Length: 316
Image 1 (tube, rainbow, N blue to C red):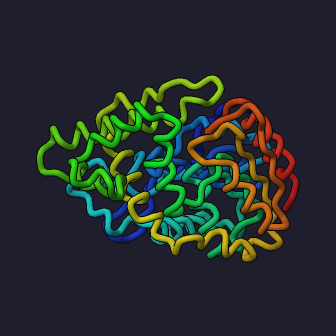
Image 2: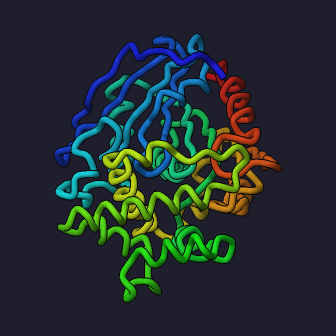
């Protein structure tokens, strides 16, 4: 991994709807442009992402998506209006930021939820994307959300039962993400806090099969926990605000964009068929399935990502 560098530029971009999106740029001002799309939704762009890029070769843009990280207002505040926080808003934000920075095209690196956003963005604006490097792939379809919030109970029955029982009995057979979203909007702060804890505990548990798993320490922070839980449930309850199967169906729009897809065979949060099916529909993509890896960058996934980013460094 490359050394982590300090940003040489940054700020808050007014993207409308009362939202200010935090961004910063690191590396070589004259290098190849790249943008990082973090997971969650709601994780924020941590500096560790920079370690995939040689700072001598890349001009790396980190952006905190609407409502999280250092962007304002925070989704952790129950008064924050999430109706203006959808995939379509995030796509417009990225284009506005690209134009603000004077970037013609950029490599897009994304993981987990960031893959959903990256694919939606690239399909909407293919001329803005030079390459895509995606790992731990998701499309955030109804099927995927049902899998991770309900069907995975077949693998982790005890843990899932606790997760299910965190919502009122009347909601347990329905959309669990939507049920948690309602609890996270409850006027009682104790109800909201318990819902955020229950949701984030399940998040940790369903990725725990990954090699070298460590519980996410950020979930101990009440503010982060609430922001994360509120955004994830908002997006999952609405299947990313996309037509179901849209990203797979529109994969042909990525023609001519080189892509590297990296996925762990042991990823139970996002089964490997998500990445495999996308690769079949996108001839310019190459897929690597990492045998001993789960969800995230461990188990050898990070090595493949690092090599792909290095390979694209000289491609203009």
